[in-house]
Length: 226
Ligand code: DX5
Ligand code: ZN
Image: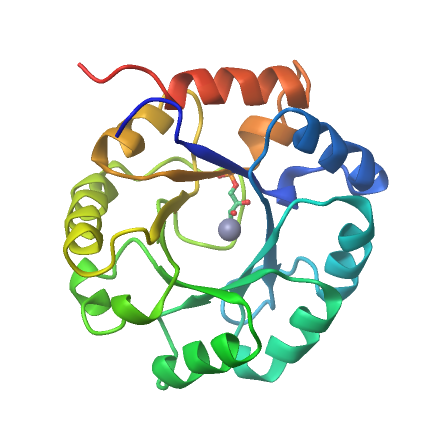
């Protein structure tokens, strides 16, 4: 990838919720491209996180696009609610969705950007028939459900395959990665073809503060390829 085109999507899962607006404001100031909101239902993934009221509050706190990563069973039940709350894009998992095409069409009908998400064990090939309908692919680089997990290195060849598919089928589609992204793993994913990096603990969990952490991550992401 060329230098300077890597976008950062801070994940608020790792933020201090008592100071959410302030932390998101710091991320915005430091050049975040969008804010990543992780929604978990304790069923699709073994953890609970947040729902539409958080999106609604964030909508008033930032001008950045809010992307909502739906780690929930039956996402169709909640699409309107998140859109009304202020989500700009909805990321839908391939896993467990028997009617993914329909879900994607519903998001598009609501006038929002739509992405499809695949877990570490899901092959890139499942994207082939749906890629032309989406704005974004999110390749999970950890199993979804928790922040601060270790990056799974075997996802790298898959990121390369997805990049090839995007270049062939849907140039311009974002290729995002999520999980265990830090200054060390970021350049590996960029080298494989990712252009949007989600990071939670590497940004909001960093002792150096949000701005310094984003600077370090951005520098790592844009490191020149050998
Ligand atoms: C994991 C979530 C991630 C999470 C990433 O299920 O989808 O967005 O916040 O956290 P880090 O960057 O700490 O791995
Ligand atoms: Zn996420």
